[in-house]
Image (cartoon, rainbow, N blue to C red; front, top):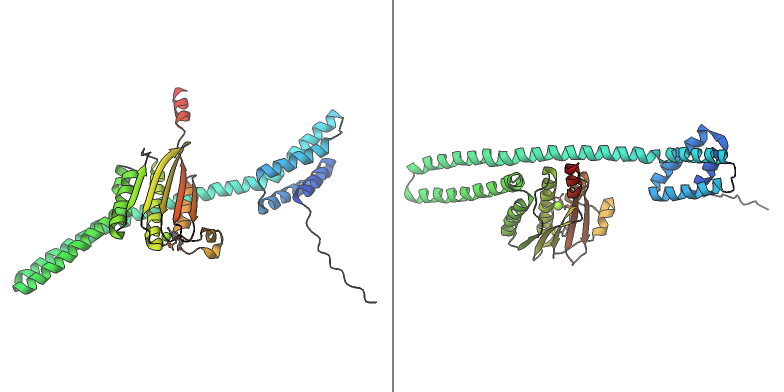
Length: 326
Ligand SMILES: Nc1ncnc2c1ncn2[C@@H]1O[C@H](COP(=O)(O)OP(=O)(O)OP(=O)(O)O)[C@@H](O)[C@H]1O
Ligand SMILES: [Mg+2]
């Protein structure tokens, strides 16, 4: 009889069982090697997406199992010490990931600042240099027109009219790119100015409702402006809505803002799979918000419109006054 070759795939033990087992070995005195296992367990927990609360709870259970029935106070003390070393080692991959995350956020913040500087430079270049070139074209046309008979003069007049339109649009775009009112008057007037321009160009009502209008730190104002800018651009570009609503309010030390349209909508679940993402706008939004410790939510459904909601942390006023009082 032919023996069937058995191929058993050994399932990996559950994290919590492995944790309890390795902790027992370490506490029994296996030393450095077992501590290395704690580190590996920490890495496994990270890849499996285990939360710190879960690990704390697994640790608690394993510890209870370990010290149960232990009457000798000195031994209990040793076990507690060993367990706390084991837990610290297991959590060290989390500590490293947290540091990496903080570095990434810092780099992102710097990148955003550099980008803002670049946008400012382009906005000024469009405004000043293109503006001056257009003035030179106006002067050259006037010079040419002086020699021309009446009908051609009229044609030149029409070209000048078109040039004036170009100039007006360039000025408007350069202001929207980096509105000086954002620095001078703050995020709300800047958003109103932006919405007014988009509303005219797209021939679409944009309703702004704000119950909070205080100035925010510069980076937060810029972030808010850029998010509303991208959300409005997306709504006009992809959704063909009849209305857009921008709302801003304060809630539990956070500034909340929502941009909602009643247009085509899309399946926002696709954003969770990398191949489902198309452009850069929504990703950039998410990164900008994360860089200042805020959160962003995108809700959309085909035929039901889209809503982008953000929460940006505000400074704790009470904490500030407590600090001021000493
Ligand atoms: N308000 C909206 N209504 C309908 N679909 C939207 C809306 N906002 C985003 N989308 C969909 O989500 C996709 C991703 O948006 P995102 O802003 O990231 O990229 P994009 O606008 O296509 O390109 P980019 O912003 O890089 O110019 C869009 O291509 C579109 O299909
Ligand atoms: Mg976009």
